[in-house]
Structure formats: C-alpha cells, structure tokens
Image 1: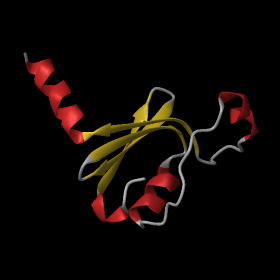
Image 2: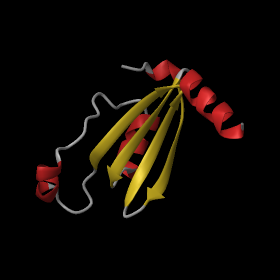
Image 3: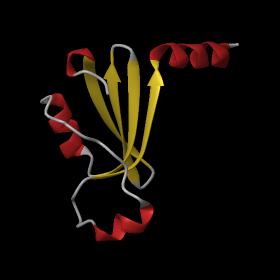
Image 4: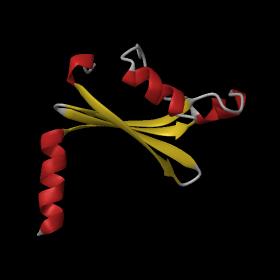
Length: 90
C-alpha cells in the first residue's frame, strides 16, 4: 500500500488496444494496464482510490462498455527503475 502523501502524478497513454496508467510516487512507480482507466486516473488524482486489483481474464466479458477494468498491475521501486535505465545506457 502506497500512501497518498507520496503520490506525485498520473500519466495515461494508449497501450495497443488498451491503456496504460502510470502512477508515480516518491519511492515507487505503479504501471496499470486495462481499459477505460480515465476514471481510475481521476479518482487517484483526487486521492479517493481505496482499492485497485486486476480482473481475471475469464470475467472481462462481464464488464459493460466504458467501465474501467484492470488487466495488469506492476509495482517497481524507483531505485530498480534507475538501475534498469543505467544498464540500458551501457
């Protein structure tokens, strides 16, 4: 669980046929993939998000068009991201 007081910003971009939402915190970065993530981005910016979890693929067809759903969540520490960037420059 990452505290709201460490939340820096959110960045929403297309990701193939879906979307990717980056939630950047002071010490971590969270990558969220799915559909209709605009609503999750807004709720996060208002610091009102209480739970975020993935939806199993066998349940995707149950979600109405336009409703947000998450297919993948990846959490990385910022120091891990820095190490990956340094390795990529070598």
